[in-house]
Image (cartoon, rainbow, N blue to C red; front, side, top):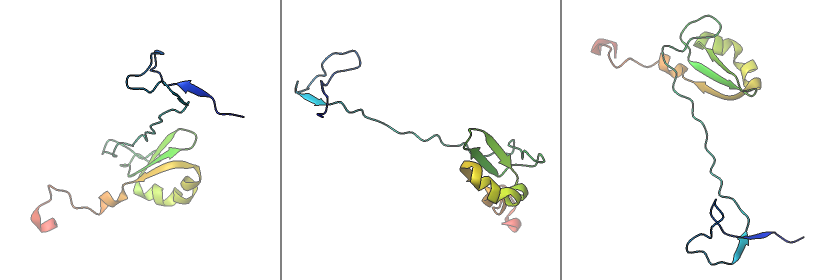
Length: 105
């Protein structure tokens, strides 16, 4: 079987400027965009107990779960099995806040 060929045209069916007029393969330009998760804030709360969330789990089924560091560690292995992506911000717990006095840095 041969490959179908089409004249390169715009979305409205007009010939594209600068085109050769020769048939080309019917190939689409595809741009893949990955939705990025927004950083977790103090307003994001653990779904288990309401503490500040440091782990966001985007589920394969399309839902989302938020966990504090404690519950992230407790349920980590099981979450890996159902997660499409995991955003772990537990490193924020070890950081010194920028408003901390010099003696705390």
